[in-house]
Image (tube, rainbow, N blue to C red; front, side):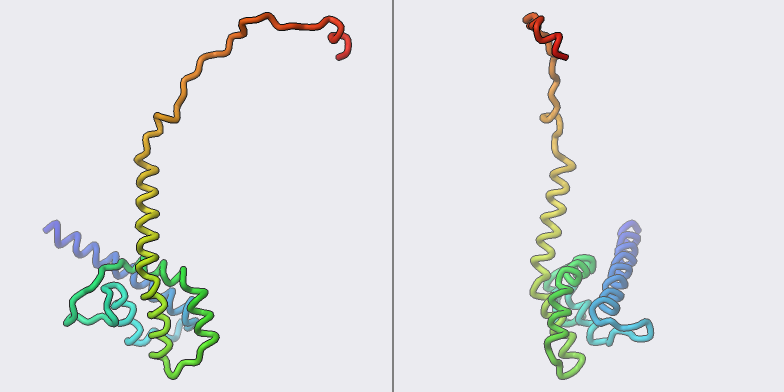
Length: 157
């Protein structure tokens, strides 16, 4: 029963993350308005990125398991490159454009995944770091000699 709840919860998380990815690609990459939707081919390409396949297909075994949040980060990092490519290239059709975009993401996905993993490890190291070595108990300063004062200098101030 506990596994079913966790699987259900994971499906809800995946759906919410995919919705964020879908909206980002729709509005920030392709600049579609609220009346447009992403074509089925692009949706399958986005879902295929999650499993390391060209398109999502249940008949083909998964090659990877990237969270949609990592794919979204990859889109955000590659956005300038994608937009420059879309502005400077001519495409034969919409599928050609989607393939171009997904190829950019696919070629950067492992790097983004590793960067996020390294950031998580660094954050974990920082939270687990023993800060006791940075604490120093000092003693109070006690002057052993008498302060020297020159009586001629007292009148200057």
